[in-house]
Length: 126
Image (cartoon, rainbow, N blue to C red; front, side):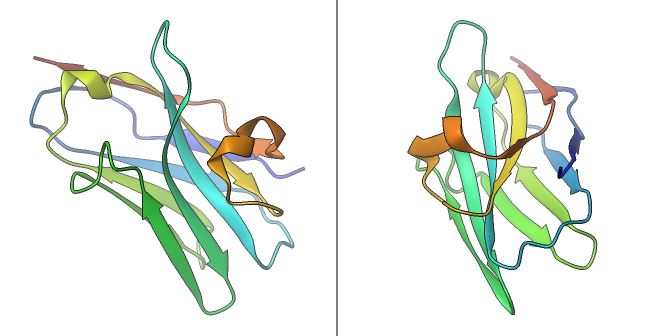
C-alpha cells in the first residue's frame, strides 16, 4: 500500500503563497498519475492539478480555475509531489488532498483512485 502524506498547509492572507508537498512511500509504479484535489466545507471535491509521471519525464496539467497561480511538479528522486500556490484568494480555502493512481489520469474517476492522503488545510483570509 502506497502511503501519501501531505504537508505545507497553513493560514495566510490573500495574495500570499504556499507550497504544499505530498510525500509518497516507495512503490513500483513506472507510469502513473498524481493529483491535487481540494474540498471546502459544503462544496464538492475539485480537481486542482494532475501530473502524468513516466520514465524520463512528466506531463502536468492545472485546472483553468487556478491556472497562472498554481503549479504542480514532481521530484522523482525524492518521490515528492508539490503544489506551488501564488496570489492566494479566500476562495482557495479548503482541505487539499493528494492522490496517486497507476491506471488513469482522469479526474472524473477520482472515486476509483487507489491511493489518497489525509489532507492538509489551507486557509486564506481577506
